[in-house]
Length: 196
Image (tube, rainbow, N blue to C red; front, side):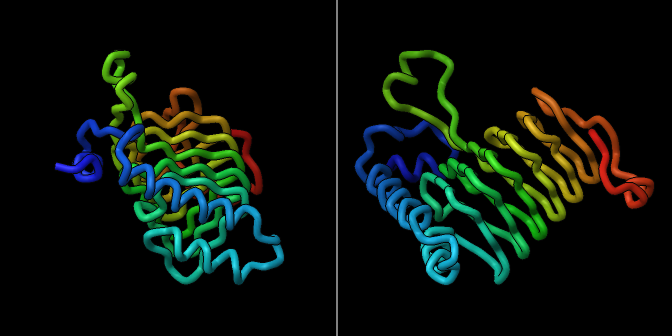
């Protein structure tokens, strides 16, 4: 079994020294470099690069440079996706975003993790578990989402959160570790701004 096959099966795999995976990451990072160094006004060129890099997109999406990912082909964007500056997606496993997802600056979605014991970690072994984000989700600034997390539909994740566990539909969640603090209600439609 190849290291890439192990990666796809959520097994420990050699991320540091496998030539195929290194080559695929270099290809993705070259495309990220091209995207990040394209003039912001040249949106047509930016979109072409992103469509070449990202595994699946719908018609309407926008990522504001800079943006970095590991492979690109494991990323799926829903309709009306927006990400602000400094998005990082470590996509050793699938990272799937639903429709109407808004991501603030300096956020990370990290499917990769490493063994706790230093012997295996020092061998370059890691694992990758998928991340799923539902529809109508707002991710605040500086949020980090860790391996294997599922964020439901109609969710707000407060700024600075570290999301280590699944977040259910219709929730406001915040903190390190991130936890649900309340449900989203009809009252929220009457307010313009709420400090979570």
